[in-house]
Every structure is written in C-alpha cells, then in structure tokens.
Image (cartoon, rainbow, N blue to C red; front, side, top):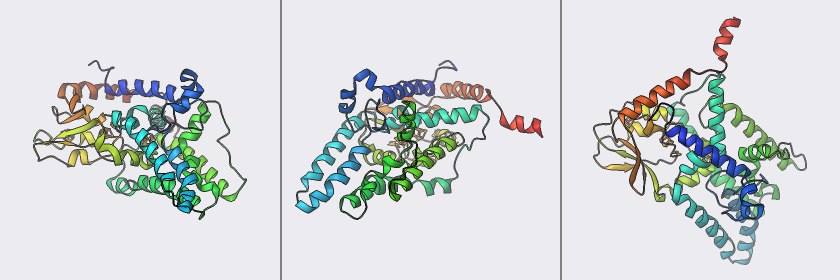
Length: 349
Ligand code: SF4
Ligand code: SF4
Ligand code: SF4
C-alpha cells in the first residue's frame, strides 16, 4: 500500500460516486425509474430531492403509518397496514442484507457530507473534538431509538388514529437534514423556510432548519454528529446480525487493548477495545452504532485481530505493516492546513 492509497481513500471515492448517484441519479436512471429502484433504500437519500436516484425507507414507513393505520383500526382489516409495511421492510431488507451497515459508512449522502464537513473543519483549523466522553456517548446512544420509535412510527401512528393533527404525519422527514441538504444541492431552495401556515408546521420547519444548521456546524468539530441520533442507524441495528458484511474481532491475547481502534472509530465505540479480549473464538462485533467504515481495522496494529468479512471471508484484516503506513499517511494529511485559526489567533494576540 502506498501512503496515498488506503481503505479510507477507497471508501471516500465510493462515497463520492454514491453521493453523486443518489443526489442527481435520476438524470441517469430517468425520473420514472428513480421512483421504482427500491423506494426503501437503507440510507438517507431524500425523496424531496427531485433529482434523486432512490429514496430512503423511512419516508414510506411514516406515510404507511400515517395514512393506513387509522383506517385499518376502524375497519378491522389489519392487512391494510401490515402488507405495505411488510413490503417496505422486505424491500429494505433485500438491499440491506447485501451491504449491512456499510450503507452508512459507504453509501449514505448525509454520512459522506458530515465527513466532508469534518475534513473541511480540520483543514480550516477549527478545533476538533476527537472523541466524546464515555458518559456523553452513553447518553446519546438511546436517542436514535427514540427517533425511530417516536418520529418514524409513533407520531405518524398517533396522527392516523386522530390524536394529533395531520401535520405530524411525517415528522422525521420534516426535520431530516438530508431533506435540506439534498434539495439545496439540486438547486431547490423550497425546503429552507419557516412554514407559518399552522403552529405545528412552524415548529417542525424551525426544528428542521435548526437541525440542519446544527449538523453543518457540529460536523466541522465532531465526527458524525447526526449519525449518532439517526433513526436509520437504529433500523440498521435491528437487522445487523443478518447482513453479509461484518466486523469481526478475534478473541486473542494479541489484542493488547491499546485502544487505537476505539480512538479511530468515528462513532466512539469503545467496546472494540474492551470486549471479547479473552475468548479465542471470532466474534461479530458489528455493534448497533457501527457504520462498517473499517477505520478501526486500519488502525489496529495487531495482525488479524480485527477484520472486515463478507460471507465470513476476510476481505480486509488488521496488519502491522499496513498500520505503520496508514499512520504515516494520516500524520502527513493532518499536517496539511489551509488556514490555521489557532496560529492566526496567536499572531493576532
Ligand atoms: S447514520 Fe449517518 S450514515 Fe447512516 S443513514 Fe443516518 S445519516 Fe446516513
Ligand atoms: S487496536 Fe487492535 S490491539 Fe488495540 S485494542 Fe483495538 S483490537 Fe486490540
Ligand atoms: S466500529 Fe470500526 S467499522 Fe464500525 S464505525 Fe467504528 S471504526 Fe467504523
């Protein structure tokens, strides 16, 4: 491996291609086909983007609960809700099984955008919060389940049953940063506004604009801020044991618990370092927050301790030689600064 070519560079290249395809892909596949590719993609590719190549599973799930649950309960015909939800989840699953959580680390436009913002923040010398504390990580982790349960299923269901007004039928889409990001990138400014037509729409549109701004700003200092609370990450976590791609740790004394893997992990998954150290068997450690980005494998210095596997075949393994070159490449990259605000501040004072 040269110091330039490594797994992260390859991943970013694939992310870029997927970003272009998902944000502008209907130009390639046609507007009709764009609607039909799956409509249940396991990444936050937004249906509000008129040029997108496919849209994420969360929009049909919200709409199915919003538009069908009430009628199903009233008529007693529960198949009215079960069948569409089952079809969406089955379609989602057929795609998800192929890449598992790599839909986050290698495909999602919003995931890639946050990485780009982090690189930009680093190169502009904005101070970077390398890792969240364990306490902060533990506090943030349940939020993604609340987002999935509350915004994707709960509020649309309550709306359908008549407990809430119609505006709460697709609350996650109303606040999703991918909606504003991808529409802006396709030259559509309609989604950045405060909707004053009703108090509920006003609350949701302000929340949406705020969350987009917050994601944009935080991503420059903290790794993957929105991913940590993303309902899609939670949906992935439910099915992750069935995916063909896995992160595996060999329980072996070769893991010296150095913690470099956890330090490299953009999602601050400390269990990489602390768990499965004393059992000789290999363990699937594709944990609920993992995005299968592979950085922990790149930065593990101990041979074969961490592996990315596909169909249980190792496709990328920790290796001391790779580690040395990767570390050198990272150091060279970190030293490149476009503007160093810290130095600028010192010069000024
Ligand atoms: S967790 Fe991050 S990468 Fe995964 S779908 Fe959500 S925004 Fe995208
Ligand atoms: S980087 Fe490798 S050796 Fe170090 S704690 Fe993680 S798994 Fe163990
Ligand atoms: S555990 Fe490894 S593969 Fe998963 S998100 Fe962290 S660094 Fe990436």
